[in-house]
Length: 176
Image (cartoon, rainbow, N blue to C red; front, side):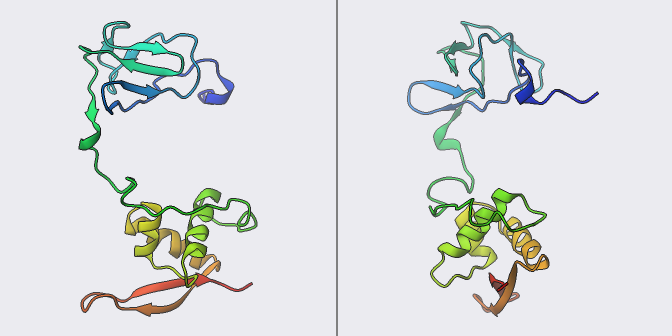
């Protein structure tokens, strides 16, 4: 039996939250506006936390009071490519690329094409795309290779950025 989709149900089970302390207040937004929460458990579903002692529901936020047993991560401990310092801000135009048929999701296509259009020369490498989208170079390579196979992008030329290793492909939009 297939589970009921979240938008067709009145009950959400096992919604995942990652608690991060930012200042004094520890809270996490919930997906919906719950009338009540029947249980808060750890990720392994082996510990049930107590309302009032470990968590409080305030509108659409789960608030963690002092003395709670729920694990909390300090904001300074977070690492990864998605921080504001690691990415470049640019507008994603979802409307302009609707006609592109791809195995990639429409939002991924929009992000890749918007990043390409945002570059001064209207060309992009996997390294540049990875930086702009805040993803790994391997993911960026996969996006670009897929769009090349689907004849949406083409390799304009290859450039060598270091004296060692393979030259990097520079992609441009293929003319229709």
